[in-house]
Amino acid sequence: MKNMKRIILLGFLLIMISCQSKLAEKENEFISDFDLKTDYLDFKIKMTEIDTIKIGMGVGSCMHQSAERLLITKQKDSIRIESSINEDLFNKKGFNKFKEIVIHENDTTWKMGEFIEYYLAKSNDSLDSYPIYTISKDSTKIKIYTRGIINRDNIVADYCIVMKKIFPESEFHFYGEPIKDY
Image (cartoon, rainbow, N blue to C red; front, top):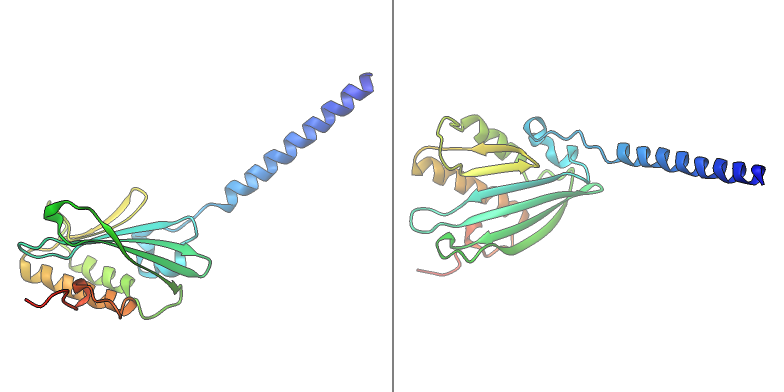
């Protein structure tokens, strides 16, 4: 009887030790060293499947305030980009899913990293106001600020050019195609 208790206890201990080592392996398996502040230029390659990047862009002007949100995730060797758009921020209808696309991590068509790098260098973060462009991963944020409507419109125009590369068939005005003729 004593031997049976010892065998059961030993078996139980072996199971516990085995479970602990598998748990430790799983924890190590899901660690990402992707750092938005330093890896944004090569984010398509450096992201892992547990990383999510959110991008917010104000694309309206004057009396027409519109915005786009991108949700970027990694799937094996590809990047999934989900676009949501609010065509009129004044009426507070919220964001509607616009389009979703998957591109390869080695894609050279979508130059979002270069766009971020270029305008981040020109950004004036001493302007303590609303950023035109925000990139975030968890609690880390990159914000792009600008002064003046001409500079702002140039950023919006360049953003539309970058986005039109991955959504060429888009009829949405953000990317250069008007919805209606006025």
